[in-house]
Amino acid sequence: MKMERRKAVQDEEVASKTVEKGLLIVHTGAGKGKTTAAFGLLLRTVGRGRKAAVVQFIKGAWSTGERTVLEGFGPLVEWHTMGEGFTWDTQDRARDVAACCRAWEVARGLLAREDLSLVVLDELNIALRYDYLPLDEVLAAFAARPAMQHVVVTGRNARPALVEAADLVTEMTLVKHHFAAGVKAQEGIEF
Ligand code: ATP
Ligand code: MG
Image (cartoon, rainbow, N blue to C red):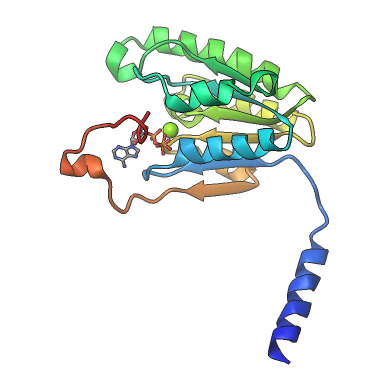
């Protein structure tokens, strides 16, 4: 029967996938959902009793609702925020570079830890795009991380070399966004 044949093909395909490894994951593109999808993976991780950490490279003016909830998982979730404003708010490149470098030092420490199943580097793509951090150094730290550790990098305009190095790349496509119709950032949706 047709359905039986289809199931056999599917079983065979599933059986042919035998590799387990830490994934380098990139969420990029102009559409909304990059950061929230990363936090969805964080939920999946802590739901399995595994540890996760977040570094936010570009912190907006807002405190986010998700941080409060996710930090409630106690020792399973570690959260680091860069602590400075946006470039276009501060207009001070040297300050932004210094803040990104501090955030990267924290991230490097996390990428060396065997106990972390997932490391979320939120908006790292923005820091790389503006050359706030050396791309080579970032890629080298990814390559040297523990074999089973998953890393998610978010932000628009992922650098091609990062896309090349990644295992999983998803581009959020902007089809429509309410900002264009004059709807402001709202609690529970944007922050
Ligand atoms: P989210 O945090 O909601 O998952 P994101 O990480 O994909 O969004 P960013 O590029 O980090 O998006 O932008 C951060 C903020 O800008 C979010 O609050 C989001 O609602 C808003 N935003 C995202 N995409 C767009 C867009 N295409 N136009 C205007 N605002 C956007
Ligand atoms: Mg984001």
